[in-house]
Image (tube, rainbow, N blue to C red; front, top):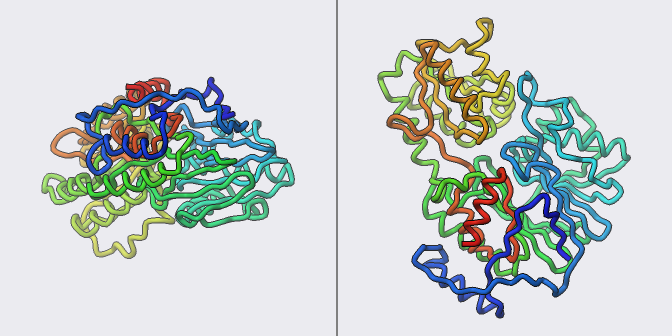
Length: 457
């Protein structure tokens, strides 16, 4: 049978026609023109609660991250005396000058892994909450005298190499056989197979996965959205997901982090245009511009940095360990000596993390950057639930020191676009992929239960 531990999941049985595949296609057509959902459509479909045909004893356990955002994302699949891991993240340190944290609580619960059965670890993308746990996993592989395959895309492997260099682990390839993922190729770890497909996210080379075992099919779709830079991508993504859905998917693990936003996540174009306006605004000619955002959003950081150079005539600098970690490997600005304006500084601290560079700028006079009256600070990221009070306190302190603070949606500028989908993205993914079971993840109880309610309704 499909064994999903109830303590870990909100499980939603999707409405589905109790008929053949052609009936399922008819439901999709009823879901709206061009395969997209519209509220005007009325769909009468029966609920299937009985999966008695071809049951298998598959166990899926989130070792971390399933009930939070930006933490230790890691999923263990256990079937027929074999195990594979999807993602291997770690919570980013608070109050530390290093991106690593000595606390075991920051890592996935590796104690549930049977290293005699473990075959492979697959990384969906290069964000640290999906790959920063690999050095710890490497230590455990060494202790258990085990070597497994490590699968990731080209960009993700570059991040992973930096992670091991940062951790000062030079022999990691002795315990991982590295395989660079090619989109739509299937990778077999009997009895599992994994097939990656491309998804839009805030870092290059992000993928979702179709996991197959004994005729059962599960889709892993955590960090994704339908639209990246062009609204035509809405239909393109929908068509892609419907093709996946034609394979009669048994279960879908899907994001829920932005479920409170009742729309599709917009494209990055508007935010980029607004940064152009800021760099051209004469009010800021004599001010340094600090931009705080998620350090791993390297694609949009790179675009904004080049705009700062070309449009604003400003050199770009990076402050904070994780910001420098990503910038040093993925953002090449070349010789900036020709840019004579005041600098644009990308700085850590968008979630007011204790010990981050922006927080220290309000507390320590002996650091590289002290924010004051001649500065503007731009928060180009949303508040993660639970951090609101800390961020508001930081904003108050920055303003108390005389700095102008621009938050993502205040004033004339919209300056943040999430790499995650919103409620419409999640519902559309369920309609396109049309699984029997939906497993919301990447969110607290409210996020997951809200998405469950939306799907049920």
